[in-house]
Image (cartoon, rainbow, N blue to C red; front, side):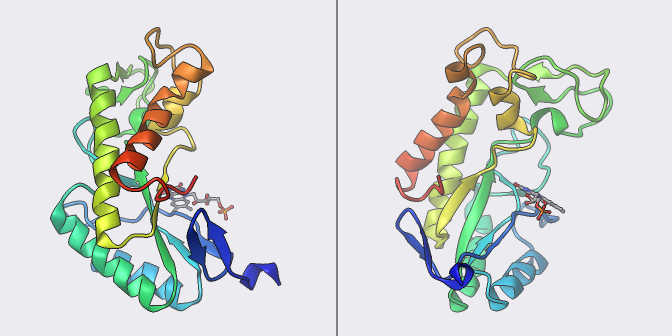
Length: 214
Ligand SMILES: Cc1cc2nc3c(=O)[nH]c(=O)nc-3n(C[C@H](O)[C@H](O)[C@H](O)COP(=O)(O)O)c2cc1C
């Protein structure tokens, strides 16, 4: 059956076609993977899953409180390396799902508006109107995504996946429903996808052209 046959994503060979869908889990106090995160994911590798995809892991907490795991320093990278080694022991591959943030979904408090692509209602408190992400912030997040990917590659992770779905920050740029910007990040499809495309380019530049699972 095809499900149990070896498969390839770009130049990465995966022992079967079974992947663990990304599911965010509570992070350690510094944002890194807890021992319990690691044990949970390694147990799935032991069970035969060919590709382990971690839950959403943000590259920065500069523009919003950390909602999940974060990956931007060497301490976090040590633990990610432990996870990668243990997943590899079972012949599985590890994919880190990386995110620039959750934008309007961010829960701060009822008085501090989160950042989004545009001044749209926050999810938790719809009367609270989001702050438009400044271009400087976009550029910083793009760089931070590349840096996180580079760290992850050095930890032995096999690929990264960009968290671009489901109403989170990248989607708040790509979707005209949220994105009302009039600068180079809003308006046309090309402009609305610019943030995502810059992230992809940065990851390919900082890590490896094949490191992104597109
Ligand atoms: C508890 C939980 C956490 C999730 N966290 C993430 C996440 O961090 N990143 C992501 O892309 N999807 C996340 N998802 C979505 C799942 O990866 C998956 O796409 C979704 O559950 C649909 O698959 P299903 O029909 O097999 O449940 C999460 C889902 C659940 C139930």
